[in-house]
Length: 227
Picture 1 (tube, one colour):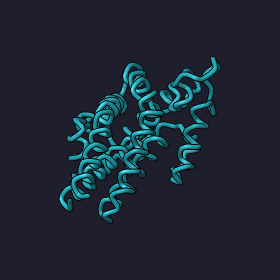
Picture 2 (picture 1 turned 135 degrees about the vertical axis):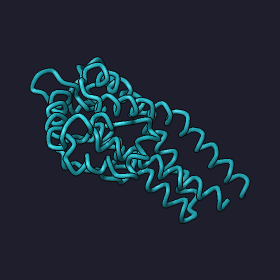
Picture 3 (picture 1 turned 180 degrees about the horizontal axis):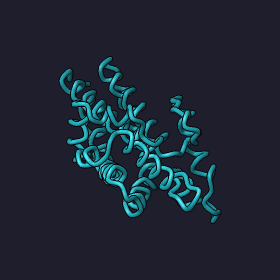
């Protein structure tokens, strides 16, 4: 059981790291500090594991030129003022009762209530709403940190509860819109940075669909064997 807890904690931290990187990508235009971090050995290894290679991007422009180009692309894609891709669930998931899709729609309220019920706050320094993609990804990252700590502290029941909360949030929110959002980014972006990260985000959402249930089943089986 000790080895199983260790494996579950390591898996939770690995998934948390992916959610953290993706949340940073969609939160704001990358700064020079963030781009420098992406070139560090640990990050290069993490990106390679996700099948992301940004070497060509870093070779094509100086760091300052790249920051400027990505800021322009980020603004064009996600902010406007012309037509842009809203990074909010409420603008992608179907509204209830035939209402028009709108910011602070039903999904926004549902996400806010979900986060409040769990008692986890996410970074809102970017001025976003709780159903902003970076807020939802960060929420999952924090749930995973909580799960990992529970396994480390041998609090199996709490870890199982957090796993089930992750699956519920994925089923009710992330699975409903993130893949479609990524498809639109892939279609409209002209930059390798956003295209590759959108592709990986979509692939990761697909990975999570099966992984979450597998992890819940594994945790329940371990609990049964140790009872």
